[in-house]
Length: 326
Image (tube, rainbow, N blue to C red; front, top):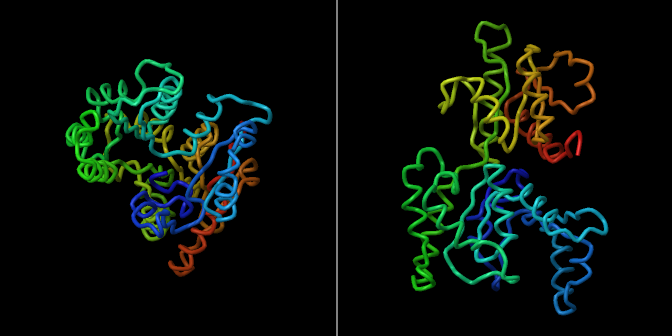
């Protein structure tokens, strides 16, 4: 995991791997690793690794997700991996790596395929990471998902991590790889909120997002996307709204003012199965169906540090709720 869409549970890569103790990663927070298992895979853990497995389970750093009982499907495992992962780093492989890359690409998540031709365990696929590496050179922005301010450097950053068949000095590859990871875009936190400055609640909503939501979202490792405030890539705002919402890592929906467009976007996010956090100004009367959903009520009279702390706890509790429909 690279950035933290599970809040503080998934620390940035440079913190996770930045230091070690006796050869082990120095994890700075809990549940840094998500493990997706089938019953068969768990039953086949070698005896000489059983103690290590139990040690990791007891450490609190693992989040364990099982696929359907009795299933042995690699495709099901990969689909769940793509759901939880933020960046796919490919070395070798065949059909499985290619399928995983498709799953990440469908979610617009970064894919870093390295050029080491180590082959596939089952000798299948159409080239695995090596083929993907060649395709990435032809279209680096789509593969790497570089931060907008560094997109022009995408091709150079990918070229620098080339191993030239394993001939490039390891320390040079490591430095270049770290630079590439640092340039990746962060997951997007899409804001749905009152944007009309002529509405009575606009000033309060604006202050809540600037003083509370923005700092917290940034600390969590997300990049804010707010219509009318941040740069747009489309000439038609409706396209921008729903495309960004479709691929957002998290959606924060504030329903203060009970604006119809906000409820449309809330429904889209829920139907998409996104991570959705709902907020509203104290005193807002929620519509019937939404009353059953957790909602964070905020007040301008509450000190900002207290609101930040309370909102942080709310997100931590509700961010990873399952979707309404599986």
